[in-house]
Each structure stands twice: as structure tokens, then as C-alpha cells.
Image 1 (tube, rainbow, N blue to C red):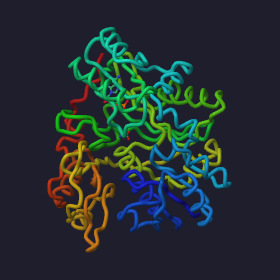
Image 2: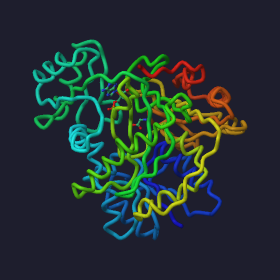
Image 3: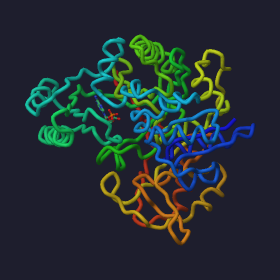
Image 4: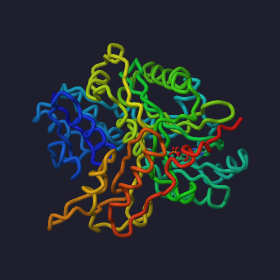
Length: 428
Ligand code: AMP
Ligand code: GLY
């Protein structure tokens, strides 16, 4: 089978790495990919967000399946363009990708499907935002309606900061700008990836992400600074409950609207005193969570993705999983999530990967004219540790991080620490 993976982050490297590890040899291609993916796939310098360019590449290659990784190409219609030329695609249509592309659209679908989520007001002026903030009270949750790479949300007890975030969002988007103000959801967060073929759902295993930049959940929101799985502290029926009350009703509502959802419905949850509530939907795998989830998946990933793209998920075998714990620590360039340093040399990846139970996935990396691997983005590497306990997996991941040198780089030192110490509490 010939598979084209679209995107260039650690999420796409995780997908390629999983496919490359399957027992049956696959012919793996990536566009545009990154230097790490280049060791496991053939790279093509094609713009991931250009629907015509991706569809043309898929045709030229004679791809059997195209897997679209990031949200921006999905919202731009890359999966539609690929299907139009008769090639199966894993990823939602542009219309279905609005579940992530617009927070207001997602809220509307959730309301129609009866999905438990935070109460919200969609606002079009700063005055409306001020009224909504006062209606809910602190802590305040203010979200830019459009795509913002995980950085469009502010959670703060400072009313002025909340108003300032809304003002910046309105300014950036002009007259069409919308801001969503939400009720604050209290409780630990969980990410669950639900694979969908338009009708049927196959859930993967839950993971936990660390969204804030600094230790102790301090600092600004980021795309995610680390993750781990499995979540021994979560209720045993969590996955079944989330599929029954959240994912299936959402997939059914999307089908009812004539925009069936094919791909990954990423359900971001808060486990509150009143049960799981949706914090956000995304329409693709989460990064850095997918790096840990796929590291435990034993069923060949290609079977799952191809079945979803073909509408045959009801026919696949039950997924099987390794019993290991997996921890991912993200190494980010200095300054992330603000403006970052680029071009600094990265060394030590081979030494890290020589450790038993450690592998490294690339995100913002590039090779400079002298052939040196350098940083070229905010999140640079995912360092993944695997072990029989969460503590062992943490030790592996951090041993790998210690061997990697990137001047000025940053990482959190407390990924999976609370879980390893049994300190995570669901409010009651
Ligand atoms: P989003 O992009 O909607 O996922 O929001 C980014 C992050 O902001 C989430 O992962 C949460 O940590 C936080 N957040 C978003 N909405 C809420 C909410 N209603 N209550 C509490 N925290 C939230
Ligand atoms: N890890 C959060 C996200 O992928 O949106």
C-alpha cells in the first residue's frame, strides 16, 4: 500500500513512524515532511495547505491513501480535493472541519446533538464580551472564534486581560470577528481521539496533554508541551461514556447535516464534578498526545486509517494495545510560544535514541546549507520514553531530553509528574 502523509510536525512524524514500524512493508511518502520523517518516508516539497498541489501529488504517486495531519489543510479543503480525484483520504471535508475551524460552529453542533459542554456566549463586540464575563464571573475563558494554533484561548482571573484578549481577536479578524466567552470548567483535562468513517466510531486510548508553557501549569497556552498515556486515574468507563454521550451524537449530527465526518474527532474534555464536559473539538490527531497514543497501538495503524477512509470501520478487528506507559516531553525553541530563536544547531538525537525505550520525533527541524540539523520552529522535538510504569517512562523521556542539546531550548520538567504521584483529583 502506498500512503501519502500530509504535514510536517511531530504529529505527522508519529504517523509515519507508526506506519514504518508495521510488519508489512508500506510505501510511505510525506509532503512536505521534515528531516526526521525523511528517514522513514520519501519527502515531496509540496505545500500541505494547497488542495490542488496535494491532490496532484497523490495522483502522480498513485497513492492508495492520503492522511491529512494538520487542521489548516483540512479547513482549506485538502481532503475534498484528494477525494475528488478518486483517492481515499483520511481527514474531514472542509465543511466538516468547521468543527475545529469555528468555535461557534462547534458550539452549535454540540447544542443540536445534546453534547455536554461549557455554557457559552458568542460575542461580536467588546461590550458584549464584558457582559458575558460578568454573567459567568471568574475565572474567565475567552476564545478567538477562528483557528489559532492552540494559542487563541485565554483563561484568566484578570478581567482586563480577558477583555484585552477579546479586543486583539476582534482587531485581527476585522468586522467578521467573533469571540466566544465560556463558563470555566473545573477538573483534569483528557484528550480522546475517536476515529470516524462518517457513521461508525473506533476510539483510541485517552491521553493527557500539558497546555501551559511552564512547570506547574504556569505561563501562556501553547500547542502542548508534553503528554502521557494511559490514564490510570480516569474512570474505567470514560471511553465508552464519551463515545456514547459525545462522539457518536456529534458524528450523527454531522451526518444529519449532510457533512459526514471522516477522520479523527479529537474530543478535549474536562472531567468535572458533573461528569465529562467538552472543552474543545479538533478535527485531527492532537500533538503531543498522538505521539504517546500511537506508541501503544499494536494494531497496524494503516488498517485503521484505510478502513475509516473507506467507510468500513464497522468491519475492523478490535484494536490491541501494549501495556506500557508512554511519556512525551516536548523540546521547544527559546521564546515559545512567542517569537522563537531559529537556526540553532541540534545535537544528541542519536545518543538519546540509543537509549533503550527512547525515540525522538521531529517537528520544527531543518537541515542548513552545511548539512547541520537546526531548529526551525516553536516546538522542535518530541522525546518519547516507554516503560513498564509511568515513573519508568518519565525517567526514559527525561534521560533522552538530557542528551539533546539545543541552545536556549525550553521544556517542562513536570510532564506526567502528578499522575506518577497519584495527585490527580476529579472534583466531586
Ligand atoms: P481550546 O483551544 O478551546 O482547547 O482551549 C485551550 C485550553 O484552554 C484548553 O485545553 C483548556 O486548558 C483551556 N480551556 C478552554 N476552555 C476552557 C473552559 N471552558 N474552562 C476551563 N479551561 C478551558
Ligand atoms: N495538544 C492539543 C492539540 O493538538 O490541539
